[in-house]
Image 1 (tube, rainbow, N blue to C red):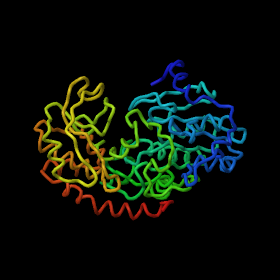
Image 2: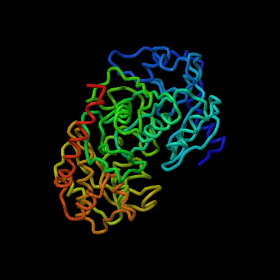
Image 3: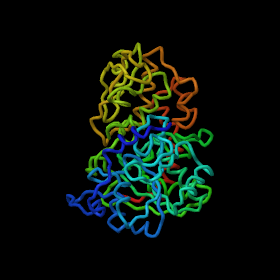
Image 4: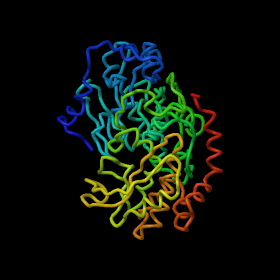
Length: 414
């Protein structure tokens, strides 16, 4: 998808270049105890990790400072950084494209920098883009949401592999996992189900930051290691939810409007693999779920399970786009009342099981997309066979334990 120049100008208005001191990204007063992002710590060193390097950055609208200036605008205005290229992922560098789209190749109106499209590119074609851009070092700074099927972490993986092929350095600027890094949850991907919503065998909720994932990818999955440097956060703890950072929330994608969306996403995104609405086209995507013909019996069945940390409300809504566009559907709204106790993946499985129990119209997408999301056929076939949510969850525990053991070698924070 290629945007018009007018649309790109509109998208970049809020992130226009400022004449304020670029060093202020890290130097402005902060309340004691605020975690600092990788970018803040990089700026505080005078961009030491990028000194003498022609630099390109993979980023999107989430790459902002604490005062919501885009880091591309900040770095472009700073003579200490030789920033020569930007690489846009799914949804684009300025974030104007919907799911499954990108912004194409263009020159950024705010900075004049060339913006290259990385979406759905990997291996040698992506390496050729890095080579053509003239960069020595590729930087990555995108806010993740903690779920295996959120594509930005696979953009990270693909860019690391491409940088290796092109002979480039790779630097990852870390940001918080908004749903904490307490533990890995859910089924582990089987390699034969690898797609852009899961390249490698990690768990459905990985409980890692992007810098930790980069270390894991480099140590376990890349064909050969890429020269990698990670710029850590300071002051972030694994038990921290996003609000502890006091960072502004910029939607990483159009249907991820709040940190609350991220909290439920690793479980309720599974409804993309069914004939129910996952809430796209509403103001509460992934928190509202439903279909025509569903009534209050679903919320009642889900509440009877007494899942930790969550209640379910009977809800009715009319999506403005996507499934059931313009039609009134019935279903549930998820209300998390105890974040620390809540297990999003276990909750998502329980909602699939109870939806199938109370609604005779329940069905999987005809392409079995659910298998790509869960990483194997097991969730689908077990639910079809009448397994309970506890039985489905028990099935993945051995693989999850092995992944947790591997994951532990690459964690950076306590």
